[in-house]
Amino acid sequence: MFSFKTRFGQGSLPHTGKGEHSGAKTRIFNKILAQDKHLLLKETFNRHGFSLTTHQAAQFDQYRDELLRWNARMNLTAITDENEIIHKHFLDSLSVLEHITLKKGDTVIDIGTGAGFPGIVLKIYVPDIRLTLVEASKKKGSFLKFLIPHLNLGKGASSWSNQKVNVEVLTERAEICVQDPDRAGAYDWVFTRYVATIRDSAVYCLPFLKPTGRWVAYKFGREIIDTEIDDSAAYLSALGGRIETVFTNPKFNRSYVVVRRANT
Image 1 (cartoon, rainbow, N blue to C red):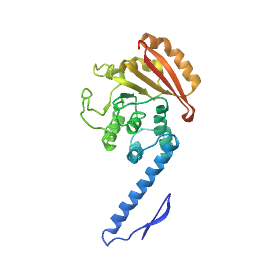
Image 2 (image 1 turned 90 degrees about the vertical axis):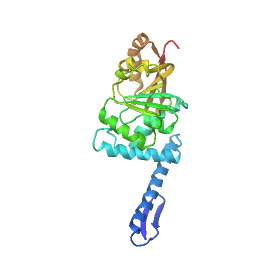
Image 3 (image 1 turned 120 degrees about the vertical axis):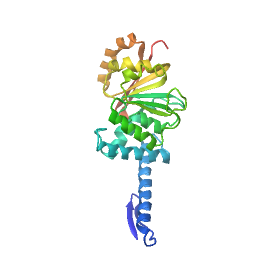
Image 4 (image 1 turned 180 degrees about the vertical axis):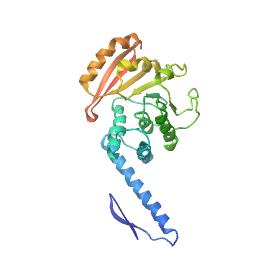
């Protein structure tokens, strides 16, 4: 008998016929291991207020595996511990949903997405959004283009102007992307989760917004945020924008600066 140990305890796999027992045992063991990992993911997410389906747990598990596999060849993330990936990438990306609601059909653009944070995480959790990922790095873009079909996220046409498009990757600078008339003023939500300031990002983030759209900037440190808001206020106003509110989330040590068009 082939023995194994999961978080549920010691067990054994049934003996099979000669010539097929090794492959059968491996398949059964891998299936049990995957189910165990998915259950752990579901429990972890649930403790933080985000319930997952079994399919979503499998997607996050595959995402983490591929992130680590690709990271061995290119610099996608400095975070390589499996549990830290869950907390510092996945749950941190989702934390904004404690303050805003993404609706079916919402158009979302994630600028400077890197390895897909927060965009792909939000797409897994809210699968009915239409997502654009902007990443200037061709190497990171290649990872994203591999990941989307691997997680079964991208369906429909490849043209953004076609309403059937589900996910797309633009390996270009945001300043260039926003010059496309099909994209300017086309998004319900703009997300940024990087170190650039609101002032430096405003010139290309604001033009993506629909008249009723919102730009959400993930930030750390309340004092730094207050200074950044003060520094950006006049510049935002000159570009036709204003800061609507700032949400704070002590659980994730996060703040989210919400910006909108000033004339709406």
